[in-house]
Image (cartoon, rainbow, N blue to C red; front, side, top):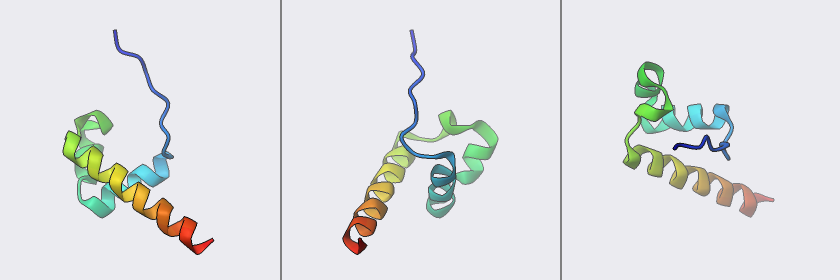
Length: 58
């Protein structure tokens, strides 16, 4: 039984990160479920880096 989880990242941010990390074409073809676990992990790492940079600036 799978349960739908609410995303912590906006679709806009996820799309931006997928483009930056080079797997947006997979997202377009297969949706978010089609990306590799490694790509998802890299996306989360990058989002954390961006949040830390923003926190340091403020």
